[in-house]
Length: 212
Image (cartoon, rainbow, N blue to C red; front, top):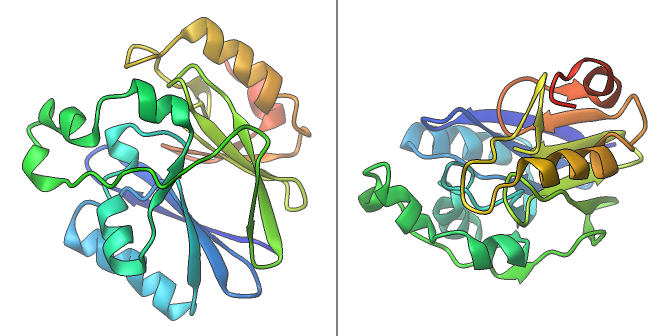
């Protein structure tokens, strides 16, 4: 059984997720901690639950979702894993940070491993399937666990909304088609854990999302 723990971090209210199972092995998804107290909160949870982090996964490489990658590297020896399309098409983290006057507060940690669509990511007795859902960014990923019935979707889809497409490499037509193909095709009861805001599920978004 996978436990999903969410944190809300940084100026952009990003959802960071720690997923762990009965073995104590875990993955960290979209490490967005920016302030020292956010780093402490994340670390305290990891220590309290005696977790061993195996992967630092990025749904995409927009600034707000990678603020904490330097901390994760420093504290746990992890380097980010993401899709190559984002690494190739998006400005560096420091270039993005410059737009918000934050370039002196963030360090770029290069992507160590490129994740491809349908790749299986293992930790403990559990696994995630990487789903390529482009449109918000060229290499946006969702991480799906069939057994426990959930997907961490990043900024692809939200409760009643979808990701913005006016940033680097965004395309609304591509995004909507990808959501319908990769997300709404999951079982109706699948819980969706987005990059911002509250969780939702496939049937709710299929029936009520005005963008779909």
